[in-house]
Image (cartoon, rainbow, N blue to C red; front, side):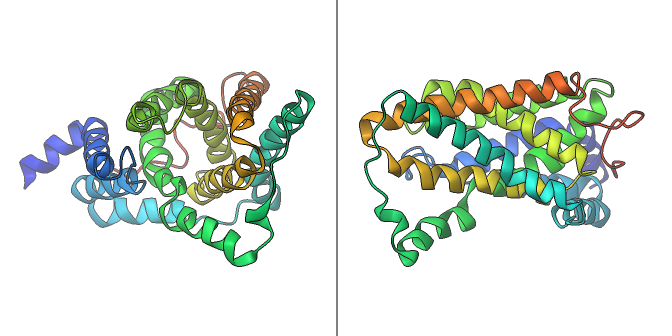
Length: 263
C-alpha cells in the first residue's frame, strides 16, 4: 500500500489523466461518441483517496461547495457565457440567419426535459476534475505562469473531447478553440473566487444550458454559423481576460495555487 501511495503521489497528474480518459471513454462506442462527463471527477476522487486520503477528498469537496464568493461572481459566472451567446446571436442575425422557431421554449415540461439531462449528465460535472484537481496542481507546478497551467489543462480537456470530434458531434473549430477559451474563462473565475469549483461548475452548466436553448432557434443551415460565431465570441472574451490580467488570470500575487494544496 505504501508503494502504491508513493507511486501515485509521484505520478498523480499523469494517473489522473489516464484514469479520466479510461473512465470517460468507456461509453464511446455504445454511445456513438458520447462521453461520461463524470469521468474527471471520479478520477480526481480516486487519485486523492490514494494520495492524501480523507484530507484530500475533503479539500475537493470544500471547493465544490464554496458558495460564499461575492454576489458579483455569482452574476459573472453565467453572465460571461450569456454575453458570448448574445454576441453570437446578434452577429448571426446581422449576417442574415433566420430564426426557425422556439417550440422548445413554449412548454415548461418540454424545456425541463431538455434541461434535466444537462443537470444530471452535463459537462459541469467535469469541473471538480479539470479545475478543482488538475488546474490547481498545474498552477502549483507552473508557479508563476497561470496561463501555462491553463493552456496545459485546456490541452488535456481538448484531447478528452476527441471522440466527439471523430463522431462528428462537434466541429473542428469548437474542438481546437472553445476548449481553450472556456478553460481561460473558468480559470479566471476560479482564481478570482479563491478556488470555488462551484462557481466554475455554474459557469459550465450555463454554457451547456444556453447552447441547448439557443441552437434550436436556428434552422439547420444557420446552426453551424451560430456555432462558429459563438466560438469566436468566447475566444474574444478569453483573449480579453488574458490581456486585462496580463496573463495572471486572477491569481493573486504570492500565490502559486488557490488555496493551499493538501497533498
